Figure 1 (cartoon, one colour):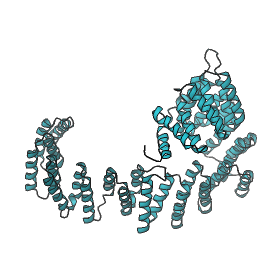
Figure 2 (cartoon, helix red, strand yellow):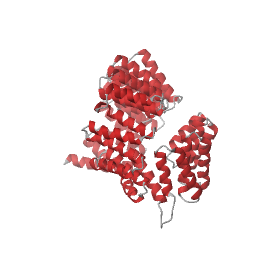
Figure 3 (cartoon, rainbow, N blue to C red):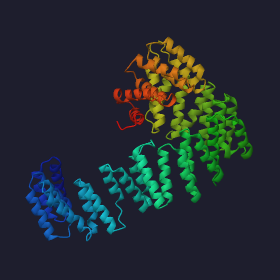
Figure 4 (cartoon, one colour):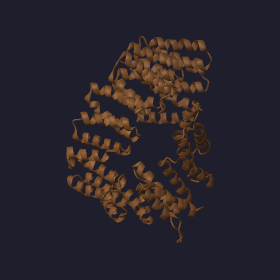
Length: 577
């Protein structure tokens, strides 16, 4: 009952304190402190309330009396010193601060509390001194995180990174936390000052105290900076000492593949193929290298697939390779009939429902490519029914919606997309929302043709890699539906296809037309951002790129591109504007 009453008083006191009603708070904190004189929270809140009401002498008397009763409570010197500082009695304040620091020699267990109080009072240099002294007296103590945060507050990033690295040096279990906290100060720009400071701190430590952990951290930094080849060098060094590091090389290969660094990805997967003891990993790596061959249009792709099938057979081991081959035959070689036969045969090699679902989705894709939408829908629907709450079921539902859209069944497509907009899989949710808006904004009303059917036809041709035909359809749309909502969508899609064909001048013309059509239209910030990207990365015109990034930053602050635009604009300027 007594504890409950104390708790209630404390809640009321805290409420007074937060609302700056310090006189009322004092009455309750005094009562609480008298009941529990060893509770430091009550004492500190009471002292602060006295200070906020300028009752400095009362606060001083209370602290002095407490120190007389309990001289070992040396952390109170910090509070007393701050009480003097509030009165601008600098000499008295510093004397008490030094008493607190000196007391750590005898009472090291109060060291972190003393340092914490200094930090709370923004006495950051004293907090650093207190933490360092505590660790010096007790080598097992590790306040690297606290020190790093203080150095960060001071803007001393070099010392901050050194503290984080020293923390890992003492205990490698802190590695993931250090990555998380240090990562807040790093960017994907290798020329960024903080990135350089972090790298230098790592290199210094790796020379003075070599450990595998420094290779790991350097690899992590290089991956952030998209320097995948340098990350691979670090991982190779680790692999030479630890065969288990092959998993990290495999992961690096996947990241490099996603970011189109095909040379590094290929080298990663070659290492996996050569050294792994797990057939599943080996075949996935083989498959990824085949994807790279397709993506880079290698002349001997058919031969490569056939070599794999000759060496390992057409069986359960090479299922993913069979799927990739079918994908290549359909979307690159325009031979969907042969692909369908391969996939139907692949279904006989597995009893796994998930694997069967993966193959069925690809069979459905092949039929959609051929324009046999109903057959495709059968396969997609089977997967959707079997895996309702699984990500593959969500993917199947999207493919149902997309195929329905291609065959102009817009009502059914919208019904599926409406459900998918809330999908847990962000990529599917985003794609679903985009297609839903395209249909909703351009659906035929009152039997009036809005061009949506022609637009869906252009989308299908794009899906089929028939880029020139899609551009022609979109050209007709732009001509025949001027002033209608479909016009800017057609211009935007056509611009994307022009970029695919490296016809950058044509793409720029389209983006300019979108901006001219309606300066407040929904595609305007997309147009500005894509213009900036074309000038920045394809035409190497940094001045024009800056101009369009600026448009996003200053004219479209709510844009989804704002963060990226600001980062790239700063990089082009070479400063921190």
